[in-house]
Length: 117
Image (tube, rainbow, N blue to C red):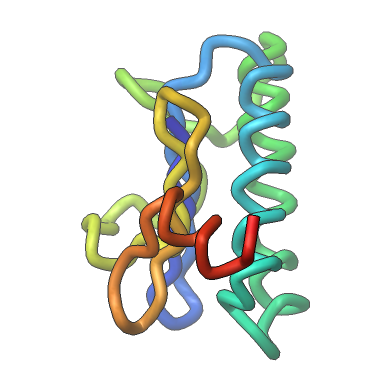
């Protein structure tokens, strides 16, 4: 599971990935789906400016390097006060991505249908 959160300028990532490869592949898939669904449209430079360092922190933590990542049952980077309503993308354990828009979640099968896949 990988969750991307954004609430104005407070952003975070949570994951229960076990390896850096699993985490980075999941991030790539989730970000790709957000881009394809035009989530964060017009705001990508700002969003990536926060998320890329957080991705690096979590990947380094998974590789055993010291970082500012808090490890519990999931790994988190960024503001830790987020709730599910501030999630912008979630990659579940079946490697399906749900992109959250202002209208709610776009389930993976609905997102594919809308994209004509």
